[in-house]
Structure formats: C-alpha cells, structure tokens
Amino acid sequence: MAEHDDIVNLAGDLRRAVERGDPDEIRAAADKVRAALDPHTGSEERSLFAQMRKDPEFTDHIDSLCREHELLEGHLTRIEAGDHAAYPLFERLLRNHIDREDNGLFPAAAIALDGPDWEWVTERA
Image 1 (cartoon, helix red, strand yellow):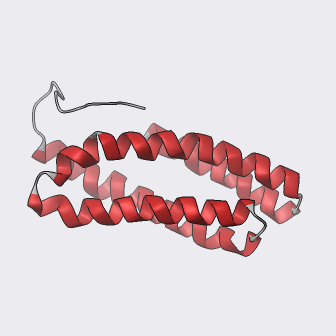
Image 2: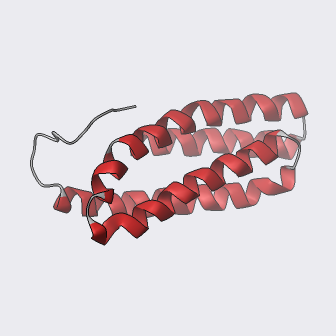
C-alpha cells in the first residue's frame, strides 16, 4: 500500500506538469510514474493476483484489475505523447483502482490466504 502512496504522489507531479504544459517536463514526470507503476503492477500480477486467481470466486475481479493496469498504461502513454486531456481520466482510474485494491482485494486476500508465512509470494517489487 505504501507503493500506492508513492504512485499517487508521482501522479500529482505529472498533473502539475500537465497544467504547466511543458512537454519535456510532462515526459519526465510520466517516466517517473511509469518507473514506479510498471514494477508494482507486474509484481502484483505475478504474485498476489496469480494466487488469488486460483480461487474462482476472485477470478473475474482479478481479471478486471489486470485490465485496469493495461488501461492505466495506455492513458499514461497518451499523456506522454501529448494528449494532456487524458490526464483527468488517468488520475480517476488510478485512484479508483488503488481504492479497489486497498479496500477490497487486499482485505479479501488477508482472509482468503490465511497464514502468517505468505509462502504463496513468488516475487515482490
């Protein structure tokens, strides 16, 4: 969850860069968001999501979170390429996605994947 805070803060830097309109600053800020977001989403998909997907009760939810990862990447690419109007949707998607994980999936995982040893973790960010 701490990584989510870092990503949101970097997204705020990107928002301010978009508001100023400097293409170089926007690309640099987008690169920083991507540098935090890509390893984070990749780690989630290879570890927690992969484990949770094994339970049919969670498969659709996990699939939707993975689709959101792809949408976030697509919007970030659009912003970086100059479509600055894509930023508000990117931020809404990001915040909604984080809320779904922090307040939905993570508590469900704590119950479904009981046990203190977390043997199921295959890779961490």
